[in-house]
Image (cartoon, rainbow, N blue to C red; front, side, top):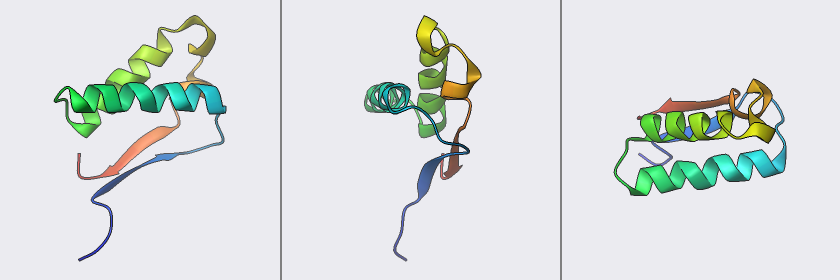
Length: 68
């Protein structure tokens, strides 16, 4: 069986800078031992606490599908 066990998708177009920051934090948390689902949640919380990206437009559209 080939293919990815999980993917993170965006439900709408999102700004490049906020997406880059979200994924940098996602991989940081993932490397520290958090699960994929928890890493994404923590990355969203991080973005939500950033003043310039606190609106849900920047962090809410990302969804993990598959193995968490």
